[in-house]
Length: 285
Figure 1 (cartoon, rainbow, N blue to C red):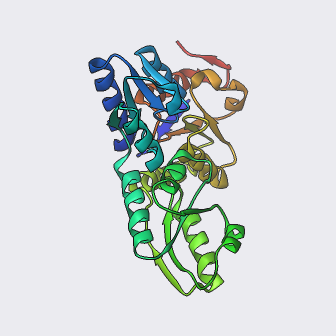
Figure 2 (cartoon, one colour; figure 1 turned 60 degrees about the vertical axis):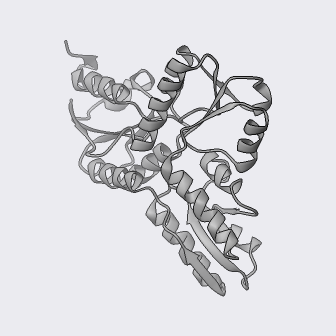
Figure 3 (tube, rainbow, N blue to C red; figure 1 turned 90 degrees about the horizontal axis):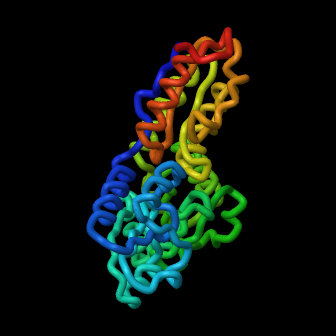
C-alpha cells in the first residue's frame, strides 16, 4: 500500500519539553508524581510509568517528593496546595497554556468578564478557569445565555481548537450585542499547521488514519476535520487497534498524528501499513 504522511504531525515543542523534563526529573529525584496524565497518550504515559513516574488524581495522595505539573497546567489553588505541603514543583506546563492563563488574569484585572471558548472538561481549560476569578467556559452559542449583554467580555480560546470553531463562536458573541469585546487569539500555531496539513492530505487518499490518544483534544479535532472531507477517516492509538477490513480495496493511505503522539508510534504504523497488501489481506515480507 502506498502511504503518505502529513507534512506536520506528531510531537509539538510543548509536548517534547514536558517529556524531557519528566525524564530529567525521574533521573534526579526519588519520588516523582504527576497530577493527571502528563500528556494524553497512553503509550507515553505507560513508558514514563515504567521509569517511575506516578500519575495521581489528587494532591492529597502525596506526602513527600516532587510534583510534575503536566503540559496542560494546573490551577492556582492546586499550585498553592502543593507549596503549602512543602513539595518540590517541576513545571512542565506548555508555554502557550501559561500565556492563556496570564491573559485571563490580566483581562480580569482590567475589568473584563473572561470567557474561554473550548471543552469544559479538558484539563487545559480547567487550569485556565482556575487561574483567575470567575472565568467562564463557552462550548457553544447556548452557553452565551449565561452572560449579560452589558458586560465587557474578554474572549480567549482553548489552544487546541480550530480557527473555524473559534470564529463561529466569536460570531455568535458579536450577534448577541455585547457592549464591549476584547478578543485575544490564543490558538496554537502548531495545532493549526497540523490541522491544515491533515485536511490537505485526507483529500488525496483513499483512507486516512489519525494517530493519537483517544482522550487527546487536538487528535480528536484532527479526526473531526478530516472526516468532513474524507468519511474514511479513522482515529487509532497505534497499529494494534487497526481493523484490517477497512484496508480492503484501498490503494493509498494518509497518516497524521496528534501533538502528543510519539514518533515511534507513527513510524511503526507507517511501516506495517506499507507492508500490507490490500488485495491479499496480508503483510508482505
